[in-house]
Image 1 (cartoon, helix red, strand yellow):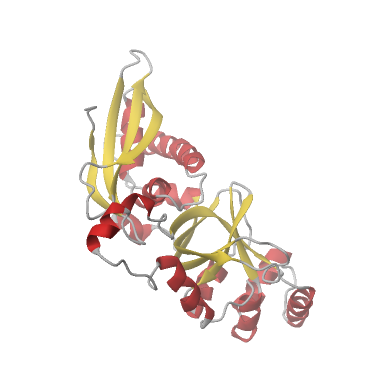
Image 2: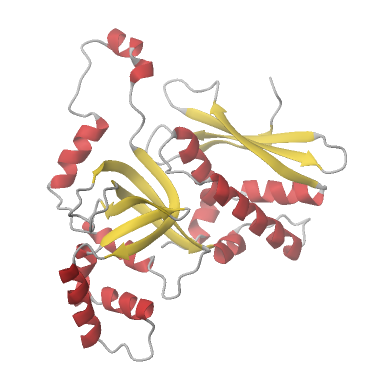
Length: 304
């Protein structure tokens, strides 16, 4: 998993730093306290869902106001954008240090399966660079943005030209495309490169359909994390395909090991095409905090 992380390509209205702490404090509940531990434990089932987000989608810039659009047009006019497409010129202008103020003025919208889901804002202003790096000169439907952070308040209509979406305040952002992702997956030695790449591409597309979610529930965060950070699921699927079996289901459930920490089990089902016999593999993922992590590696699963 660590090797995969290292090899994976890493990749608007202004939200002032004084506003973020006040908003996030209310979300995390840091301003509240229970009167007794016993009372808190009895209310456990009533605790709100975690504010953490692990979302997979696509991020694009929008103009919050006409004045920002005109200001950017003037910046493009001053730059040498000969023979560049509009998208290439936009990226080049935003990369210039003197135009960094425009990056902060734009609103950055994350869409998931074509639906506008979040307005994305970095917790640290230095991370606007990640948004610029994720702005592809030639966008493709196979481009993927992964955002890890926490859900903030609903944006006011003035923030992004009338869009009233939740603000996603991020700590990490990864941008890549399907081809580079598949090439970075370690290939099992017993499977030919051509067969493995075909299987991995098909599985990636299927898993992207499974990650059609807003990345807020423990189930969705675990699945999204595995989809982009745990290559063993692709290797397991390729091996199953070589044995004439295909993936027929994914199920997420709370692990019996879950206690002080929140741990879920993600179970993958593979059914043989001839015998119709189903075998299962699973992994355990800790989703207690902002960054999920693997607890146990992929291994056979037996129904209890």
